Image (cartoon, rainbow, N blue to C red; front, side):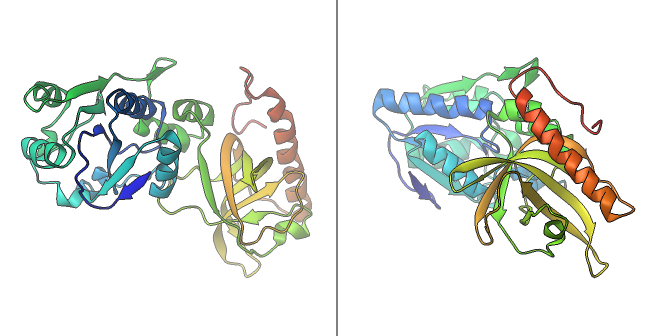
Length: 315
């Protein structure tokens, strides 16, 4: 897959348009349709994406991303997309829909097809939509495909819906909408080693700045490193350090694992919330609760893939 950081002529493209945050189940249908059309016409499959979410340019109400741009690019490459064109939204935010269609999409990509989701808008004041692309398809000789809503359990899959579910710790719904487990990843850093002194060594990472934040609490997670997947207990919240200063901690205790992994990249995927963040009067109460958290994981893992669930914060 080639990643292009500026407009480049790619003739007879099968275009997929969207920000594709999360590359959720609905996005996958859009991209797979573009891939199928590309195969049909022996054309390159091209995803045209803005680097920053337009709302983070146009509004004071910033949104966090489900995937970083690097994570998104890795997934697009695995799908088989031929080209990803990354553009700066700021350069096009005042361009009308007609100008954008003619001077960007048609001029640079001479598309054999354009595929979008049902709720895709473009151009100044969101002038361009599915009807606009359909109406102009004959004039510019491209096929237009509007992908209808992808519905799971009566809910339309969308990035905003997934963000909402993640912020409520509803990983069962969010992960079903995504088609994979929501994850964060980072380099293991050296901490104060308090967890190790308690008998529960943990790996510390920095929570990615622009990714959706889960609520403070303790979680059942899967931890991937060195091409192996382990179960883990993940803690995210404010913790008072040995210097008396309260700091934000992102740490995971990996079950049945004892290797030194400082400096290694780990991927942490969320399965279920165990409990909210708690304060403890003494070390023994903390150790007792950690053992309970581990027991939660050991019990819960046997019920994955079934209708069984333990309500959050009840264990």
